[in-house]
Image 1 (cartoon, rainbow, N blue to C red):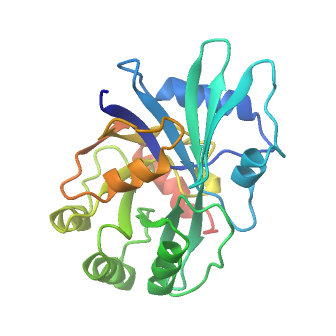
Image 2 (image 1 turned 90 degrees about the horizontal axis):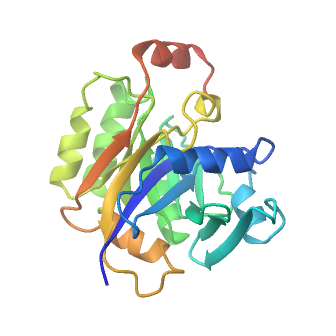
Length: 262
């Protein structure tokens, strides 16, 4: 059995009120497939009472049956969908995006149920771990300044890599250097993954799959189970994760800064 190369958008917005089949096809097109064993996945960044993942997993939201089929369901928080005309698959993974009391964007990877936002960041990280997920600090323009920057540094120092990762988002403009916190986080074993956008307002500019991470997973003992191996890979010491796709321009970041925060 060969290792699996996974292309993974760590914070994707897919609106069930929109053209979901078109969004999934476009996401697959944006993420490469260099070998037959390559897989693609998007982790949702659902807000508030959004429940697209649960509706999909419980067959309450149905894609056109003549073109799409659910071929695997991972009870840890994943649904594998096949596009029948070309036999391409994409995993939809549970995930939520929350604003903590201090204003940082905290993702809850692999968590399907809605969670109460507005709590202190440390409480959110602990609650996400208790729910079986992995907390993720998402980079957003203007959110990692001053006191919030210090808080992000403290969270990276206090929580182990198994409970906290960082998300580099497409909102970081092209040519904009990485925040210094990334290097410090890597030294402490925290994974830095890539994601399109943690904000619904940015979903039109950076749709699913636009900016994504690529990493190797060990051969899957059960091809219908992805979440456990992915969590293990994200939290493994010295995980090798590359970014792919594209980020936005400085002008896109400027307009994002002018929009009200969710």
